[in-house]
Length: 143
Length: 143
Length: 143
Length: 143
Image (cartoon, rainbow over the protein chains, first blue to last red):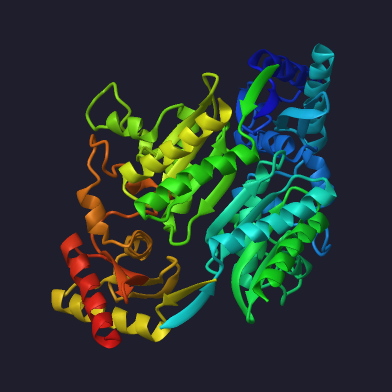
């Protein structure tokens, strides 16, 4: 039997709150998804004005980050055509559910992934900034 | 009437065992899929800690390799935008089921494809190394 | 933080072995899937002669049972058109991934679902019989 | 290693010809698909005037019949809501690729399934009649 740590609902809400605070600083209404360590959605918020396509995109970013245990922007850096040993092509896997656009981050607890956050509606930098703010919030409450 | 050779279940298990042994050498828990010559799944194992997205990705690598009769990393080398006579775009075919990321290999028997193996959760080199270990295992038991 | 119990790979293999033994009693080669408590595939075996459509169907049965925490045949009993308060229509949810055909069972450990098994290729009774054999095997090894 | 018998292309063409002859008797232009024993398409013909939706439907009928090793109309008879041990719900499996409408038949050779035929554009009886004509053609050429 394996024993797995997983974000709970109240933690997920606080993580989203952290991302929302940063989104307000940017002045950009975002879609924010938090998934558990298995990639299943725990909480979602579309701030008033968040973009429609970002509903799915934020979920896919969170899923990808939690599953791959790395930021989605890291994938983007190694997803370049014509390099045999990089990951070009992974961005279309799983019917496109794999997302390599910046804005998804894994959430670690005691060196294990316990969930992921995905943010979408701004630029990849802004999305990543908000995702990082969510991760930072979790670091504060879990330490 | 055609007569087709196809991996059986016990061969599939041994192939997976070969890949698992290599994965343990790498210290990376992998998802490993073995399909038959028609691309249909015969056996699958997610080692404890194998990544969620690799469940599908390993199956798609095995499917692509068995169907195309070449390693998925070979596709990657010729999937480059702007080259009229190469294969750019094939990575999005079949809803993304075609996978050009390294880690999928066909399994040959008497110069015919009898199945395929797909490995995912490490780097493309590590995935390919484990897939090759599976192929090597089959070569030993079938010769 | 939640703490989750989850089947590991060696338990999944023993569960499949239990189902395979029963399938051999029936004389019917089966497809057998074991998923974790999040519905993600851990292990799969297509016995030689198992049906092609059962590859997906066994996974969907295991997914549905683990997620819903009940046998898929239970859903079937309450999936009847024209009864306002039953579940007719759930069988088409998730692109048809929800499966109400008998042969899927949740796997419990200390009153919590830790995974699911799905069996397909025989009649619903035979599929359910093999799934139950898998569950019984787990009960023996985990008590 | 398994040894599998599979329809070849010239057999598939003759099977389609048999179905086309019957369709002309009915005066109904049909879509006719022949798949191999793994459910993969070998040959397809849309007679002039065959219906658009029947392109996919004939393929799904052939797939279902070959995989399940029985006629699709047989499934229809046991796919009734509220009967615990029948197969209600299987018609929506595999994203609806499982097809229980009459007109799909397996093709046997020496007691093993070597392929399937699916016909669509008429009534289920007409579709089944054409599929049977295709099967009968194969029986004549293979005996």
